[in-house]
Length: 268
Image 1: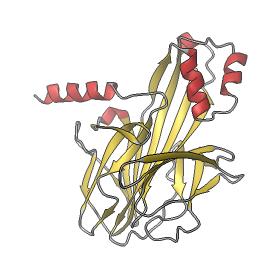
Image 2: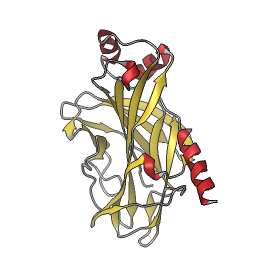
Image 3: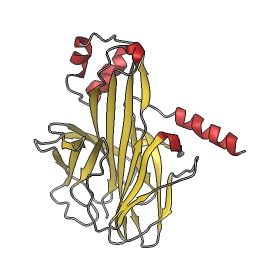
Image 4: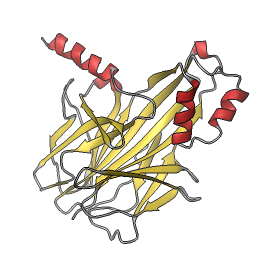
């Protein structure tokens, strides 16, 4: 029965949507009492709506809980859902960190690639694709997701920081303790360096479930700010596209995208 369960989980994982679908960590509650339970789903979807997925060890490069006291590895069993389901280890700001392994996406339609590049504002990717002599169909993109979520335990005091993922969004302000009258401030990072003039997509979910989507850009220091509203939940997303150095579609992926996401809520 355990083998059957594992195979079932692998089938679910293989069905994860790709392309311009976001991946994020979705807590059951963003504010938890001291001694309470931390629970969060892996979600994949669009417009801040999507199904939850089980935990598959071989598809997770890193799964950690960063607390004011240190870093704790999260070790679910295969097939666990929600993937995060542990007692809160201490009071303060908990940062859930999840980095996937690389997945691969096959492009059989050029328009699908064009829509993705335009949606995520990936610069001169299309022009570079043609300069490299790559075909308009029959090529692969590798992609990796780097997700974070902020959960307040008790007072929620603490700060987010750079976690060393290939790309990530760092919360400069703490949405549970800081003054947000000037907006939420985040840094967008790739390989430890700031990403200036990068598009940041913001998904804002109201208490009635309606979602508003807007974009902003980072400044020359890789920093962006945006207004937030009490009682609302947020998903912040940024994507970077990399040339793999391989110009032979038969030999492997010709592009590699890295997706950063951050989720949090603003208390009432």
